[in-house]
Length: 105
Image 1: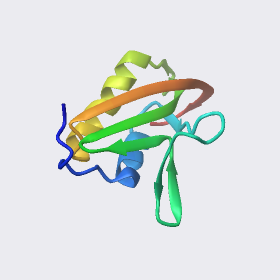
Image 2: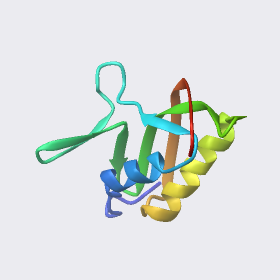
Image 3: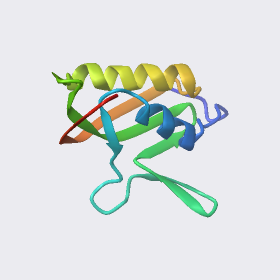
Image 4: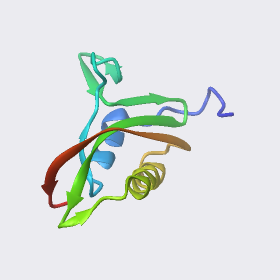
């Protein structure tokens, strides 16, 4: 269990780290936009943060650079990236959809 005194990771930074991972097409805000972190005057869709934790909902690319994307490996890469770069001790990654689009990175 994470102590309530543990700071929340920066939701915008978490979003940027996740989007920077090869195979991530977009963040998924939920069917009605309910998955988000609310900040003063703005929101970060697809990311929820709490003390020492982050929850990331994303849309994966089906293929990157001509290769099929392993969803398990993608989720693990996003988790590792956010743990290392955003002071989150617990990171849950949900792949909510897969995009047929291909792309670089």
